[in-house]
Length: 85
Image (tube, rainbow, N blue to C red):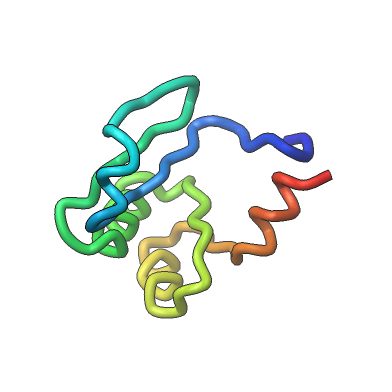
């Protein structure tokens, strides 16, 4: 992976009013998913179904849920490092 890019697939989970900001779609390896309820529940379900995911979060409770599903958790600084030269 080079700086400024993430390897596909990338999934963005939107909840609540943020869902109005983008339609659900899968374009060029980036999937936008609308959480039907809490975004954390949707992210945890994705981690449970696809244990090879990397979840970016600073939320400790969500991180614990993702790790319990045996998926990887990284913090926002990891994501920033991936996107900035």
